[in-house]
Length: 456
Image (cartoon, rainbow, N blue to C red; front, side, top):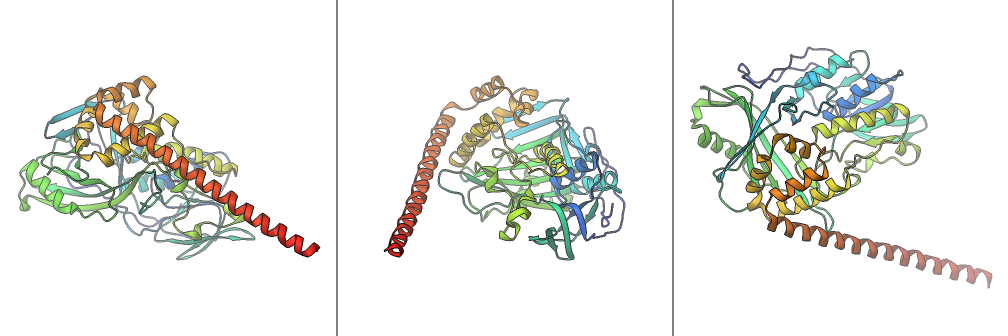
């Protein structure tokens, strides 16, 4: 396998209990072939997982992974471990205990059988490089401009050259849309995370803080701070907001600094930022097909080439923004279809999960002031139950138990709004269908008149 030099991004400090470092990667050299069997665009969580699964399948095939970024990948991914990660050795840290903090109290949970895990981009990339040696090529600093049809297959046009491929997978993930149709919900999960190092021990590396709502001024969208401590002096501290406003006017860095001062009583000279990541995750009840594929129309080649281009999106859970474990599970299916030459299926949740997520999204959008207590109650339930629910392995009895533990009034309002929105979408669909029929009918009458004129 070929790739660029990758530098380990682990923060300084010795990991404490519950946190485990991943090994450092090594440097190799980039290379860009002219033709391959499979081209994967994007060396993130989904792209690398698909490449690793492809390498493990029977048969011989050439695989190319094109990554637009150059240098180290600052991203991190987290999930409860469901043993479906094809690169478990890339785990950067793990915790058996979690908490949610609010002004009304703190809830804690644990599930030793399914720890909460952190995977950093550099660690995962290094593990993939070792697994894929001789089986795939990864090229960094190669943004893809377009994918077009050609007589010889699909032509992937990148900044550094063109590659012909029999199959192409867009694994770059969705972008946050600016708006959604009537009857749908869109929240932008925007975040800035800073890896910080302190001059004195303040963090508890046995417990991850999933949400800290303390000390906030009432009003506005859902906001919280997320803390992943890998030692007593090193942690990822992340400011997060669920907002319908695509502009996101929140100063996340100031929010992090304020939290560091309030929670750990650290002065400006007692901590420093060693790395930073930021992003936006769409939380929406749009069907996955509405977020898949093209970032622009150049990713929609027609004909046979169009059938050879697939996309991996829609794996982010709408109600939470978690997508790492879901993308790992889906990558196995995607790889099998790429190897077989069959159409790649969309990721689809079971109907019960889609409905519960739709209700929860409306609750978060319409009643954000109640979110802190809702999450505190949810995460106070027995750990294994919470993990089954968060990883889509819950039974109907599990779901009912969770629903009964939450505030009844607000969720009944959200339920009513969900049903009302479903009716709105249904009515809009009927109107669109009627409009198409009228248009087709009018064209038919015009054609009939023209034929009549010709015959007369």
